[in-house]
Length: 254
Ligand SMILES: [Zn+2]
Image 1 (cartoon, rainbow, N blue to C red):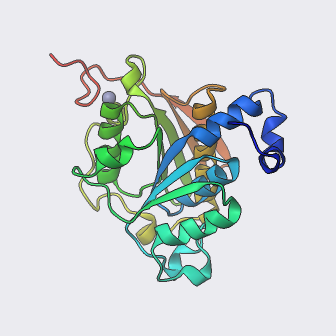
Image 2: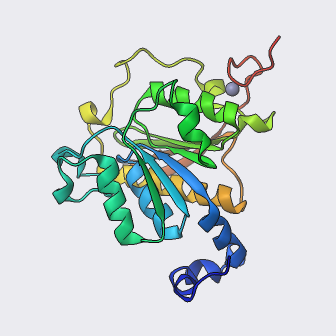
Image 3: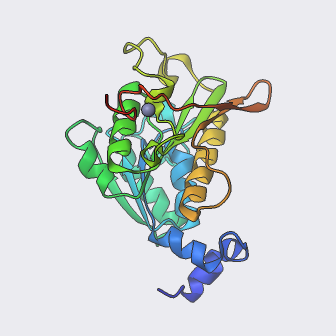
């Protein structure tokens, strides 16, 4: 499909890049990305992916917008309080880029629906805030061979990695890193401990960048590497993530 005149203008700053160009922009326009959670991480991910011209953006969240969300969940305006987050996100994204097809799933990911929902997309960005969803996504993305770009937040820190363990060694999965989920409620969530809102913006924007890199096939993938951001020290560092041959998800069955 040829780019329209309006698309040439809208995406001009992509088109001028050798690493993107018209071919890369076509890849973005053809891509289908699922964003899990329309919260602190999901907001910047959705905003930048819509602006970049991702053709189809899926968003799954079962929550409604609360006044206390607005300090960091920047896809939601004040007038959306009480509205389903997926509906609020779709409205904002339509204003940013009406060309993007936004598919909303007002639901929670479960063992039952995860394969159907993920199966309709090329790539998954995890902006969820709980371990049950994180492990469910890890295992389903491994089975369905979908790249998973996951980020996590603490009050003043963030973590980011890409998981493509279905490619085989040396690529690890999330379970190679942390085999089992910690007991529920043993790890505090943003809602209870708080978070400096802009940190969600930093990590979600990095996550969106990695999604675009994976689709375009440019630069170095974060598969096998954990990127850690320490906001108070203004420091980024990388940790190598080895694949665990005994991993219950991606290890070799004996
Ligand atoms: Zn693994």
